[in-house]
Length: 174
Ligand code: IMP
Image 1: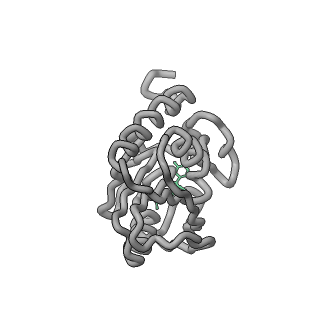
Image 2: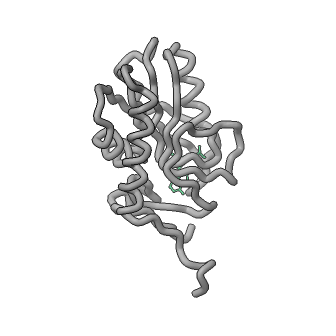
């Protein structure tokens, strides 16, 4: 196997180190505020849990569960809200926490929905960014890792509900 063909991998230690950096950046940007972290279920649950534990400040957490209709690994842009937020976002400094931005369709839908509710500010924190797959104009304000167009699992990411519990991120054949 050549270097080029090696499966893509982000090791556990590397994820930990990057999350510490993101946490410091977010803490600095939100000094004196009480941000509301909105984790997108299910994929972001591990990332959100590690991220907020690395941020030493007053903050709140809520979850939004969405399901994207589509084929195996593709999304179509249709998003169904399976669980809405419990904390009102009006006037709040909201940070959406997402596992991965792929086409951007899911995030665009969620972003527009939250914006329509009148937050004081809205930013996006994504662990992974698959930029070359983007179909709509949306970017995360905080990005853990830019990743190639490969199908990734682990650290919250799944394929048919499998592999979410891996402590690292790896590529699988799709
Ligand atoms: P988007 O709407 O195309 O940006 O898709 C975002 C969602 O698709 C993510 O929140 C994931 O749930 C899923 N997704 C996209 N790429 C991957 C991947 O490589 N592995 C696992 N899930 C993925």
